[in-house]
Length: 373
Image (tube, rainbow, N blue to C red; front, side):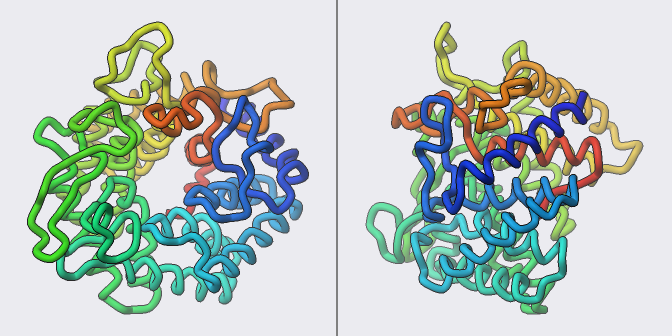
């Protein structure tokens, strides 16, 4: 079953190369990416690059390699010209583009570009407050003291840079931010805040909030998913057992609150009615995260059974009920993702990150191709 799903997905990526040209998919509009392409200026652009690299690793077809390498050239121009990177999602952008090329081809130019990207992310460290600022310029009165849970997926870029350059400063701020996130974004019942505010000058905690969840204090499912995967990755790079335990606890919460078909609604606290939106992308992220967790655990670990069961149930449901398998005209891989339900922005459509994590999870299960984190 997994191979059929992979082959279908990779063929869609192949067709999209011609459809997208130099454009980058972001979120679907009425079931199509083509009407909403961008010129590599969104936080999501790296996921298209990642899909191309995954497809190349699976097929060894130079068509995918050529298209993927072209995106890395675009990411080089974006970093040099500092285009639309006033945020922390540099890890999403460069991990799946230039770092992927370095991992696959050992291209020295790609390596240096990735180190430059890590430097850019390092520049968002706010020493006075002790965190990596999520959005906006330094000192911004609205965004200056905000962290968001998504940033946990940007930290691997810093860990990698520290290993690659030998400079401890990259890993030091990554660990500091991961620990701050563990203390303030993860609540006592293992649910999570989407965002948290700190005093910009002192680092004193102000309080949790949401930007895309149902309400302040609810558990936005994609945010919970970022936490499951992000803490698992911090454990991989640091060996700190607290991160592994936090990831497992957040995974247990996620799996325990799923509906019968094992694919998440967009927020765990939203009242469920007939038309309540799903977020297939949140479940795709968690499938990839569970595979990371399973890899970290020893064979006899008592948590292995429920993690494996949760993975199989969710990935099977995504493949059988949410994937656009057998729909050759579809540009996306996973139906029923949500971007911003509160903002009425693509509340029920294809999400390019959902497509990426779905294919990453399938390839990891079937072929051992792990992605680029």
